[in-house]
Image 1 (cartoon, rainbow, N blue to C red):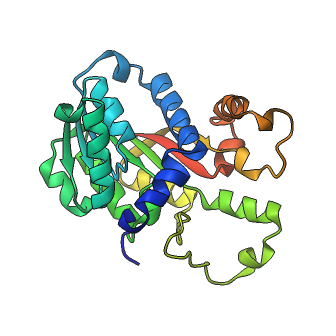
Image 2 (spheres, rainbow, N blue to C red):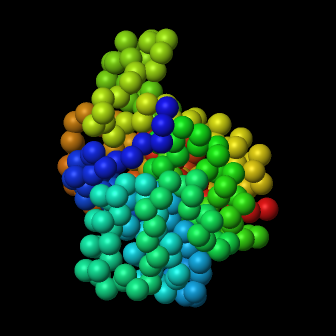
Length: 256
């Protein structure tokens, strides 16, 4: 397995996720977590932020707007170019350093970080634990990791609800087609928790992204209204057991 590069499906990703309902919900949950636990990011400029696998650069640009020094990086050349266009249009390019590198080569260009963002990246890597170790080493003491990743328990729950039992009964994991946005071999939440502990990172917040809306088959009642869906997603995102069954997980973890 090699690290996934989204050059071949950049436009598909933009349409399907980044600019769609899924991307909006993901950003809403992450923003809620950060504003609740780290309001200083909105109040005190000057933090050093690294955005690994930054995609279209939403969070890189958002942090730059708040006055932080931001490093953007993505392995995809197409994603990097799209992010640069977004930064130019929002007049934030001067606040950003852009890199188009494999993560293995990135941190040699960076200083120790107050915040590292890594959203929907590790499920696409051959060695996800390697990146988590490198992130831990790159964080300042008391530095924060904002980590978002695909949750295989949510995949299994959806297949159960949809009656896709053959997929669940396969001895080998299903291989996604080349253009799929579903990872082939995502790590479980329990495995990621173990790696974070191993590398000296303490979990402070665990939230679910899309805790129920992906499982609904009929748009009845409030499900027919996107604003009500988002309101309830945000309400239940941090509540167990819902947070551990979501399609994606967002963690805030801290350097001990």
